[in-house]
Structure formats: C-alpha cells, structure tokens
Image (tube, rainbow, N blue to C red; front, side):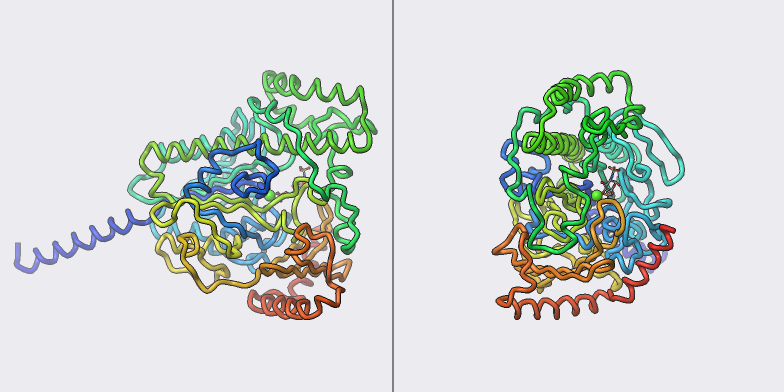
Length: 525
Ligand code: SGN
Ligand code: CA
C-alpha cells in the first residue's frame, strides 16, 4: 500500500464510524395518534371525571415523561388535523381545510424528510387522507374512517386486505409485526401509529363490552346548557347528545324506540362473526329490553343516553390503552424503548357532555385541546409538566429537531423539544385557530380566533357575522360571552390586534376564506 493510502483509509473509516454513531444517536420516533380522545378521559390530566377509570399505559407515558397542559389544534377536525401534523402548516396553506376535499400528498411532509435522511418510515392505522400515502416505506391504513369489527386495510396505498378482529387489537399488532419482521435495524425508525378509536360510533371490543357498565358518572354541570349568553353558533349546532345522537347507531338500538326509524347498525353488524354478534347481544340485549319496558323520559332518559355514550367511549379508549401497552412492552423487551421518542396525542379533543355535546369542531376548550404526552428519558425527566401553549402545528418541527434535521422555513410551527426537557424558550403568547367545515355534519359554523393564556376571541362568519369573547379564568366553561361587556373593552381591543397580527403572520385572510367557501360550494353542487 502506498504511504498516502493508509491515512486516507483511516479517514474514511473515521467518517463511516461518525456516520454510524450519529445514526445510532438519532432517536427512533413512535408517534401515537388517537382519534377524538379528549383530555378529560385521561386520568393524568386530573380533571376528576374518571377516578375510577384508569388507563395505565397512557398514564405511564405521563409519569415517565412530560405532560403538556396546554396542547391545542389549529382546526379541530380529523383529516385537516392530520394534514397539519404532516406538513407543519396551517390548513389554509396545506390546502386540506375540511374532511371533504383531497389532500395533496406531493407536498413536503416531515416523514418524507425523515426518510430522505435515512429513517425507515411506516404509517399504520387511520390517516383519513385520500390518495396513496407518500413519505413512507410501508403503510397499512384504514380506508377513510375504517371499521371497528373485521376491518379492511390498504397496504402501501393499493392492496386491500381484510382482517378478522377488532381494529384496536389489530393496529398495535401490525405495529409490532412491522418492527419485528420488516424494519431494518440498521436504521432508526419513524412510525405513525394511528388508532381509529375513540371515534364515533364507539363499538367496543368483545372482551370490554361489559366494562364500566356499573359505573355511574355525573353530568357535567353545563350538560343542560340552554346556549344563552352566546351567539347563534352554539345554539344552531347539531351535536347534542339528547337531540342529535342516533338510536340505531350511537345508542346501539335495533331501531329508534320512539319513532321506529331503522338502525344504521345493519352494516357493522353484517361484518361481525356469529360469536362477535352473540357477545354483543348478550350485553346490549338485556339493557335495551329493560329500556324498552320502561321507556324513560326527562332526566332518566338523559341519564341513559349520557351513560351509554360515555361508557362505550371509555371502553374503546381502554382497548387503545391496551394497544399502546403492547407496543411499549415490545420496545422495552427489545431494549429499544429508551432510544425511542414516544409522543402520544389525539387528532383533536372531544365533548363528553359539556354543553350537552359530543363531537368537536368548536374553538371552545374541550375540542381545541388534546392530550400530549412525551417520553424520552435521555432528555425528559419523569413527571415533567409543560404549561406553554403548543399546537399540532409544532409536532413536525419538533420531530425534525429531535432527528437532528433542519426545520424548513415554510413550516409554521415551533419545536417544543427544549420545553419538554424542562428548558425555557422565547415562546408564543397566543394561538391562532380556524375551522371551515360548514355547512356539514354537526353544523358548526365557520370561525377563526385567538386564544391567550387567559382570553379567547372568536369570529363566526359565513352565514353570520358574530364575535364571542371569553375570560377563561372567570368563566372556564365558556358560558357567557363578554364581547360587549364595557369592562373588557381594552382587552377586547388588544385581542383584535393580536388576532390580526397572527392572521398576517400565518398568511390567512378574508380573501382566502372567500376562496375556500367558493371551492366548498362548487364541491357540494
Ligand atoms: C363521521 C361521524 C361524525 C364525525 C365525522 C368526522 N358521523 O361523519 O359524527 O363528526 O365523521 O369525524 S358517523 O355517523 O359516521 O359516525 S372525524 O374525526 O373524522 O373528523
Ligand atoms: Ca377525529
């Protein structure tokens, strides 16, 4: 060998070694996203509803990592929320403003950037964005909303496969199977593990059909909200447990006991095996019969509906929690857990009877907020609580920062990595929100607004032009708009200014609103 060759070879070996060391330093990324899981249904958030209902695996993440008290979405609905997650951009820039229109998969997303940088990427579960997922080495996704029992999945965007079992058992199994049999251990992994539950219509797994049936819950104190003190939007929605839930869907009856209207459960029932159907009838059959004998009215009827809803919702969260446990246990047994950044969140929050509601969409607290838990013991101390206001817009930049990658300037969020580690950063004093899907399911009017740590200003537009304002300290349940209260005139003025600044900063405008309205009108025609 010539004299110069040896040092050159040593140099190359050194570079290769550095590369491997860096690759090993990069965390694996397990991003867990549930559908419609609200903070109140997670013991770690300590809101008191569920002292008797405990989800050990989610709570483990909170105990061993960081819990974000103020975690929000930019647009509280499924597909738009996922588009924000992937792109790190507001709906008006990524183009996916509602559940209806297509998603442009050709745009930049964080999984694409991770993959380009040597991560092996997988998407497993619900994504609710039409078209073939891009940026993933592997995908196994539910078509559209998917089914709870014996669901179909689409492999790599093209191949439809049907499985027997409950989707919340299958999805974590697929995650473990991918880790065990597909993932190339020479690379870090990045998985999007997205559940269907607890999305409507909350069809519990066989073994949990009976769970929580003997627990009595208290109505939220504003369950019988008369919607005074606010504008038309809160009054004219169609998401009330008492008036807008379907007997033959949400309430699990074979037909509406009052009107005889036929059930929509024929389709999901038609998918079930004899054994699954038997287990189902064994639980719902006797309770439904007792109901039909008594035909309760008034508060008793309300109690029945509220409990059926809440219990079924919590049963499917229990299956989600089991699934998370299965995946965490696998990673732990393989010695991978502490090398993995685990993020747990939901696509948005949900109402569990506050204001008498289910569903989401509004910029009010229960649907604006999501759970956000993060475990990464190399950096995050157990039991950390973060109070800064973060958004789902921030997850993509954060993940890129953990992966050691540059954050593209077109992303609009900010990395919360330092906050999770207990550090401080110059942080935002306000968040911006914008919801679009109207007219549509549940009829929540279009609105945008700003929230600070204490106040909220909302503008409902399109078929109304109404402003609401709340003092979250004095009125945490948002029952009385103080928009016209002269005592708040100065605060109102500063909120208007902040709102306009944020709209400029994020590139939103009335002109864009007009364009999105025009597009949705032509879509519906
Ligand atoms: C379905 C549900 C709605 C729900 C939307 C959007 N109706 O349409 O209650 O708001 O999905 O949910 S159902 O009769 O089909 O259950 S999202 O989470 O996907 O945005
Ligand atoms: Ca959702």
